[in-house]
Length: 360
Image (cartoon, rainbow, N blue to C red; front, side):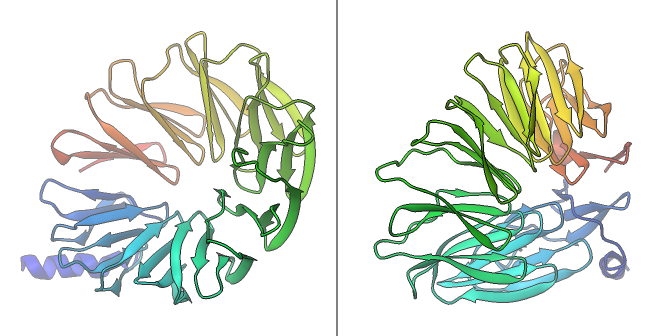
């Protein structure tokens, strides 16, 4: 009866699905939190797993690569494999053959792959047959460039953007299926391209300006190089020469802080920084003071912030509201979509979903 119950639960999983939160419990069962319940994916120990917001890929106890997308478990291959996962895609290489999974569809990208990288909605790879750099994006494959010399992966790959250079040292951007020329620079190995979603920024070594690429157009946002800059989803944050923190979006910019930030960081939809030991965030058009201390650890993803509280436990800031999740020391935390996973002592777990806490 025990085995019949497990089979029934696995069949039941196909009726649900809104992303994944993978965990390994104290029985070494491999589970995913969904719809208020911890549902089994595997009842035997897994060797390895990698997860994004919508899927988890893993090596099972027999060495097979499998994938679970919140709806059904899929067998991928029983061969030795390299694999990478983003929130929406999986790329996996068997020998020189590079394959991919995209929203339920498996396909082969090339039989002559070498290096590859999987991002939110793009897979970039080297094809040794044509000595080319290629990209898979939005159900189509693109040859970015064919090189005369040694193959080399692009210097910057974002969620849906790539910066690469051709044989003539012309730096180019691939975005939304199109190609945009940046400039020709010789002997410039250290250009720092910061790439987000639909935007990128860099200091132009020729004009000595701070440049933003925004939805297909280039703008000189500042007339001097900036010492630090980062890209998010459709916006740029940068620190000027006086230490002020600026936010750029859709051709407009404003100051986030006119104090020298102790630190700051950007990912996806959120900016966090500390000034005079106060901890702030800016997300969805709103600036919020989160704490009157600077957390030792924190993670940001999508529009969610999770951090170590002053007692050594875990707090979260989700959709404008702060939650105290646990004061248990040495707890670890991850973000999946707009949900928070907290890993506590003895493989116990807590998930924050829609303002409600669930434990195992």
